[in-house]
Image (cartoon, rainbow, N blue to C red; front, side, top):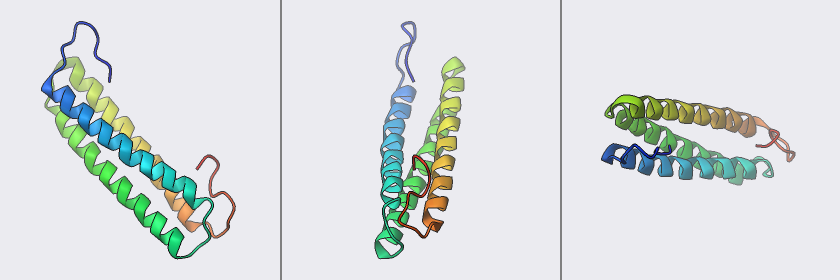
Length: 116
């Protein structure tokens, strides 16, 4: 979310930005774990990485819920922008979850999904 020159940062957007940084950290962790899954054979290590990925995605979902609450507490155009951004983040989590599901079910040492 970028502020235009005529908008002043508010505590709401700063809080949202904080949540956004946390969200990006958790989804980055999940994406990196998905990349690792592509190279793991079924077993304890793969199960551990799947659980780590699930945990990161659950944390990201909780953060997005907080972002949605924060977005609803803002006014005007900012509110619409923040709600749309939170919705996009939910879609990103859904995509990562679907990749995780596929990766967790694959029983080969080959890549689980293109660009996983």
